[in-house]
Image 1 (cartoon, rainbow, N blue to C red):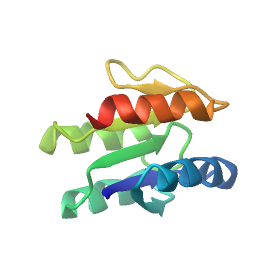
Image 2: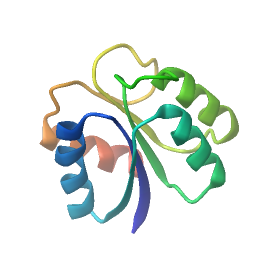
Image 3: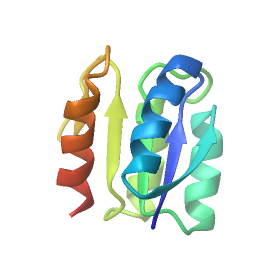
Image 4: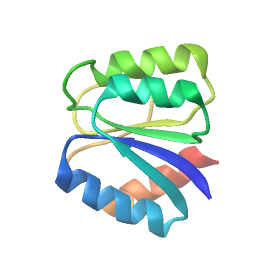
Length: 108
């Protein structure tokens, strides 16, 4: 079971993605703030990070930049709108089938 960190403050998004991830065999931890995501990922144990592009506090982009500087091989998926450079992203509103395909693509 792959340990996945889901970072979002959007309860509707969390509910949608959590079910898909659990059904796909992921052990999911949920947090609201990107700054907490940085701390939890640095502590170790996660095989994937999924981050909502609309969080508050530390931006999702800044959090991912910090994480990628120390853990460049950790798969990261943005969920939401905006440009995320070369990292995979799923646009909002989330198509759950597209989300599943993207998770499978980056988890390999």
